[in-house]
Image 1 (spheres, rainbow, N blue to C red):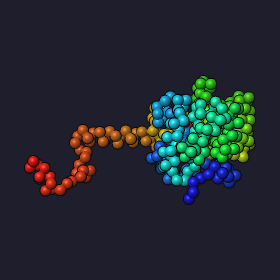
Image 2 (cartoon, rainbow, N blue to C red):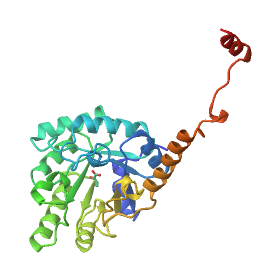
Image 3 (cartoon, rainbow, N blue to C red):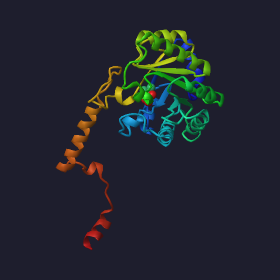
Image 4 (tube, rainbow, N blue to C red):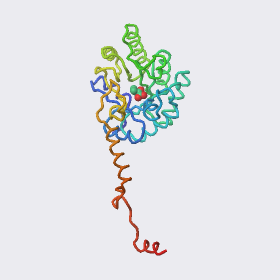
Length: 278
Ligand code: KIV
């Protein structure tokens, strides 16, 4: 089977096929996601938090995104690899946006890029699409603008904000985006937007009516137990399983129970005797 394409993702909406999407940031996780049959894997700039330990996506650089994208591309055969354009990689100008989208495709190997926001971003989306790079849009809570929003909160609750979101969604569709992430948007508004667009919406904290859903892989696998966002569901509590396994390993090393001959390698007896005899 060939890799999924942005064109096929678009047609999934018309066929009524829902689109599951999950993030991955490295080769090992990307292989698991690909084998699980996800049509899209997102190299999110959320890697700033879950891989690099920052408290937002703001410090993530183009070099970070290129490196992690390459690892994910190396680990996948079937999924469409979509990569986030990080903060300040597209905001300054259309030329900068085009150059950096090109880097993510050429050096990183991504098949598509994702840009946050509308307004001045719409023209950049148009230029990147015209250059032959499929673009996924991202509206609602756009984490690169967290300082402007004053926190990670639901967007589009007031009438004017809801109308603006709908207008922005249409503008991105007109600019050539093939899909649109809606993050932290009231479910009924996400439903209206989904019904009014021909391109698929991919929700995160945007209710059940979107055409697809995206989640951060660390959230759904339960790799964090200190904070579980309301919009996620833990399908596993992997942090507990890992803590148990690490604890057992450390204890067995301390006790001398690991390794045994099962995990060791022998050598020629005569040679050993020679060595012992000096
Ligand atoms: O960076 C990311 O993981 C994202 C998703 C949450 C949509 O943009």
